[in-house]
Amino acid sequence: MEFNTIFGLLDRSVKLYPNNTLTLDKVNGQWTPKTYTQVRDMARNFGAGLIQLGIQKGDRLALLSEGRSEWLISELGILYARAINVPLSVKLIPDPEVTFRVQHSGARYLIVSGTQATRIGNVCDNIGIEGLIYLDEKPEGATGLSFAEICNNGEQWLKDPNNLAAFEASLAEVTPDDLVNISYTSGTTADPKGVMLSHGNYATNTIQSCTAIHLEPTDITFTILPWDHAFAHTTNLYCFIYFGAAVASQEIGKSPMETLRNIPKNMKEIHPTIMMSVPALSKTFRKNIEAGIKAKGNFVWNMFEFFRKVAYIYNAEYYNAGHGLRWMLWPIKKLGEVLIMNKIRENFGGRLRYFVGGGALLDIELQRFFLAVGIPVMQGYGLSEASPVISDNLFSACKFGSSGKPFKYMECEIRDENDVEVPRGQKGEVCIKGGNVMKGYWKNEEATASTIINGWLHTGDMGYMDEDGYIYVLGRFKSLLISADGEKYSPEGIEECIVDLSSSIDQCMLHNNQCAYTVALVSPNYNAIKAKLKHNHHIQPGTEEYAKEAINIIWNEICQLRKGGSAEGLHPERWLPATVGILPEAFSEQNKMLNSTMKVVRNKVTEHYEELINYLLTPEGKDITNPRNIQVILNNLK
Image (cartoon, rainbow, N blue to C red):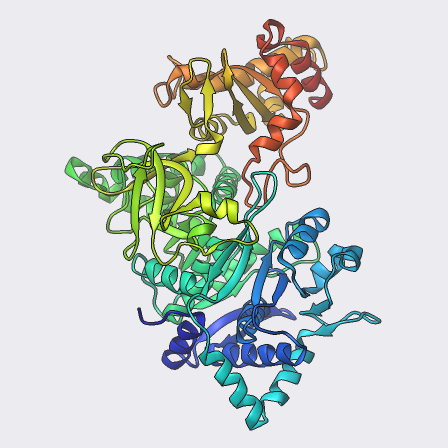
């Protein structure tokens, strides 16, 4: 490999692109760049300052901040001090989530942005750290040090030739096995596990990823995903460093809502060429696109729908776009780009070539939509334990519904319950082997031993590989449902279909644990239901009849997956829900039913709604217009 440590990656890019912009932050209303050389020098100073603070090889420091240049400089500085970064999500609840990770990792210091320092409040007094390091100005009367102070101290310390020599000698001893991160999983099970990722893991996965995507030094990304997120960490930071490209961070507002409102404004200012996305973001972008078009009136909406459908036909399955007689549609597709699709892309800055998709399964309809708009989502697959990227679709070879082909410099097999590789097309567990496989789980030898077997990472994901070598990920083994006859099936694709097909359902989770039938727990979109009920003037709002009609709307949209429905045949009918439970509240991070990557924490939902699930399995509960559903609707549909 060209390099086998993060230092090797950074030094290579500083040599090749010393004056290129690496980071862009909006400071006092102006986008402020830092070059590759400046970032490297500031990181060295910060690392030297940490050494003066008493940080030694193997010590842990936790980092809790929004994505910004200081985030990257802090991580690199921690590595220059031969210590280990514990990146924390800004979405974590201070206690117990931040507390657990800091204490479990044994972090000596917590590095925080100004926003996060205010949010975590008094938690820091009880988590056993030696102090706080403030990325922003230190609050008046606060103990601890500021980022600027540590950098200044380190810069002065390195001016002594003896100190500089000792510093360089220490860096020369860094090996690929030295840890970079303890990156905690998002916790879809009871306790999050600390994934230990090394210099070699990141170096390998950066090179693997860069064999699949090619950037130019003139490329720039706008980062919306949190930088602690393994997918954003490698693809948004280290891959862009490899190519000498630029990384622009999101402008943080005074509130989470203001931060969200800054996104479209920032994209028009930055004009990104490539962005990273997860399904939740893709869905939000699509809703915003469609809402903006509808606001322009029926004529524009109908025109958009016409050209979208033409593009769907022309694009086919992506890899065969324009093949056969479909080439005849090219002039119409091109006209649609001129009249409407190019205007949509202007809202993304006008230069965006594509998204790289990861984080979870992205349904085919969304992939078709964004390709029709002209900003395709190149769907990939990975997990933190793989540093994290395993596969990705390429422009030259992309298949809708797949997660692309496994990267070079990696072995990938689909294995059965007996750990034996299965033939192409058969389902099993995705397993990989390569330099990107984690070192293990921090302080959890048992989980490590059951996950890495003979050097192979058992991902826990169910999937198959087609004849052309494309991976299709079907869901988590641990989330498999089991019918009464013992048949196992993944619910995630069905849940995605239900939400995508139904404008009246925002969230859905299926449950079956050797039961007579599958039940669906749904969180409705009450605004959409109200709009549909307006057309029925014979029903009085607030009545039982009104609630029953609302439930029937929800149920009829679920039944589009059944025989005679608009989406029949997509999934076996025996797997589809036989009844529905209307939930009193949506899944959210606050109630612990969504994790930080917006995935449903299935065991939490099942535990919380155990009594409701049991009720839905009774004769009364199986009736969709049961008293409990009616009462929830009446409480919310006012």
